[in-house]
Image (cartoon, rainbow, N blue to C red; front, side, top):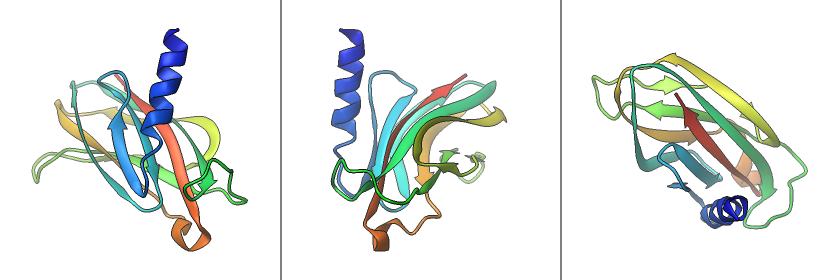
Amino acid sequence: MKKNMKRGLAIAGMTLLLGGISTVYAANDFTFSFSSNVIGKTEFKLSNMDTKCKSKAATYVYNTNSYASFTGNYCITLDGNGFFNPDYKGTYKKADGYMYTTTYGKIKKNTYTVNIGTNSDLIPRGGQIKGAGSIVQ
């Protein structure tokens, strides 16, 4: 039952059109669906400790559930929300359906938003990246 609830919430979160991030079922979990860079709205209160983000995404034909013939890339950044608060940028991962871990090291205690970027040419190719992640401390 819990697994089906999580799956249902994840699918509901992935129905966003041209981009967005939403909280799924716990404070540090999120979903995303985008064709261009996304600035998150949900805030996560994180502690002063080692932090990583586990994420899984795939590349789809825009606004469908069909896999694209190419693979896009995405990068998850923890935005410190302010001039004096640091951001923690991850490395680019392939949106190929596999689980990846981004390690940020020890971060400063703060409230962060998750921003997701791409260096892929998704829009001209009719692509979209859909996925989910979890911030782990």
